Length: 422
Image (tube, rainbow, N blue to C red; front, side, top):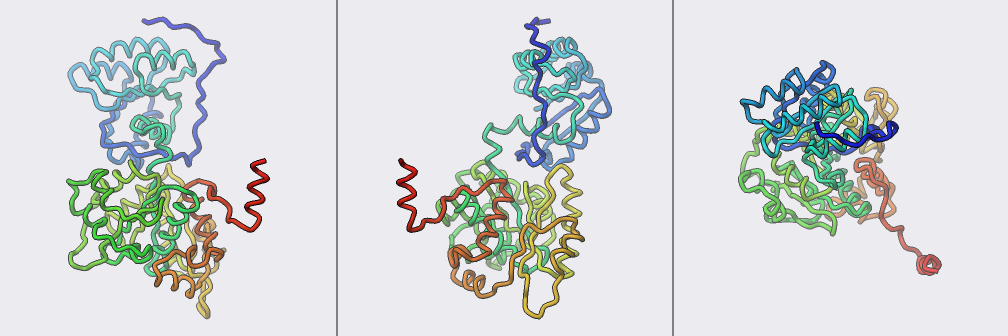
């Protein structure tokens, strides 16, 4: 056994768990095998394997810990990732030395142990262990550890997918998606792309006054060509920070897709764009469900009536069950205050959904209609309109970022700048 210097017993690993809303980039298509010693750890790993971020990983769990792993790999190739649970200090080091003799090059090892000691951690790193996790572990801790093996250090700021969907057709979900994406790009200065997933009837091209010759259909019908260069050629530049992956909005063909039709597109966008806003059409199919479940953040747009309330509740229940380790979906009310229309108020909505809407957007057909017909955003039509601030607040909530734009200039701005310079 390799000896190592003893550290102060008070020097321990910082095992404080990151907050639940930490962004975790999904793992690629890898094989993971776990060798557990306790049923609690096995249950946590099994639950992690059902998380959306490990949806592409192939996970296998065995009991027996380090000894079982060494025996298993004497005659079998090792997977991309091995998870080992072990009890003692000497067991870890001796076992790793034996495992090294049967482990393939390139295999990454995660050790789950109960000794909270920096000296041990340093020795494990020196021997090539990728991560050391203090037991007991929870589902999100296992997900974070596996996904972290395949994420660059800056990945927390890259590849966040925001899905926006209407609880019912005609509630203005696309309009809100496009205006929120505009706020993310302009006011938060975050490079973003809007992917219009309504290939037959999408309106993103109209709203941004763009008519690109290529778009998302070229990617989804050519899956073998998808890479960063190909996707870049399909993007239409709307502003310095905002790009569009437009829908063809034609009926020349039928747009029937398999569940994973958009996976490679989303994966490629994640590697190049910090923020991807999905304009999800109001339809229920395998791929729309997959897009919603796989998103990092979800906004449901609803109008204040009974059908929208029912649909919002159904979507909430499904997403919370499918994404137990993620933040709860958000929702907003749109087109509130239509004259002479009976409406369900925000309080009743909140009681049924068990959560408050993040915004209540008033019905204003003149401003919204003018913006739609001109191919402009609300902020371009009326910078001081009350919904402009609402879209910014929604953008901040969905991205977890504060406002970074410069304050609007005034006649005092030159004087203030001189005083700051002094």
